[in-house]
Image: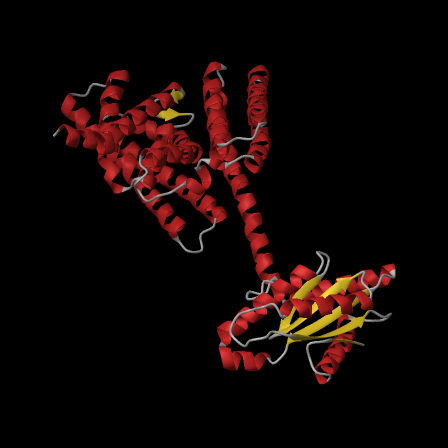
Length: 474
């Protein structure tokens, strides 16, 4: 029994208890920056609820309901509401349902989006922001209805409460849900939801300049809010939006974990200074600023992934899928550029065309799989001989073209003969000898890729007529 109880406590009960305590603590954190009843500058409990439902799912709902009921009993005492224990329990259950169910639906929609085969980080970020805003809006009205039904809020307060309530909840989700998700995924590692790509061990290593960036950001934040306190005008409060710039800098140079951490710290500092500097008249400006800064930082995280995705698409478009050399389209574009440059600068350039000797017989006798390996290894061997400035591409079938800038015909012929020697070292099957025939043409005034290719192709045809496995030139 002791071992069983220890295992139960370690794996389930203790984790649930810790999460419940954490939820109560962050609810109190929101209370510190409350500027009217039931409305805070931001509401961190919303972020924790969303993150817990996203990472853990349906089985964490009872824990969140218990936390909502506990905090309702405390709130009744704090606001000195005239409710008995039974009414308070009912109010707590209604609040729990109104708070949890919309965030559960939003989190599960986000999980479905994340599991979609074509979901990218930019799409995930957009989905998260939209679902956070929508879930917070539905939660706002469902909780307000619950509070009115439970007698914890008068109907007359709805019109003045719903907008700051919504923006505060939305800020709590957008700002803190990513950070809480990292914490919860560590606390509940067996949920099957992995964030290691974004908040794994490597992502938790900040750059050596991170602290300086953070200090600079907080200094700018304090200066912007002191300006609003000194000027005491609505226009001065909008200076806080300049924080988008340092946060974009952090997002583009730091990992996701430290980006979300910096946003959370800045948002807490904004919420705290609103109270300390008596900036309540401009609280809606600061609420929207928190959301805008967080959303921009999240988009900043998506920019490198989007650039990498575009780079990958360009690589796929410019690379032959089998041999990993240049595709025909890219080869032709690059050849035209090199030809134009060489003509303008009066530099030599050669084009070499080669194909595998008796390639059809290789496919017929050894199979297409072996034929594919012949093409792949032939390209690998050729690339080891060619220079970095040379470009080899697959023109079609077993025919390849090599662009050799700033190279004269004699040197290219020697390169072709060295490649022929390397081809003879390819061993894929018994009695299979790989060889190729080469044609070389040098650039002349007025040449285009087409005219240069045609002369090299004529030389290739002559090499075949003369016995194959040799280099001919035009």
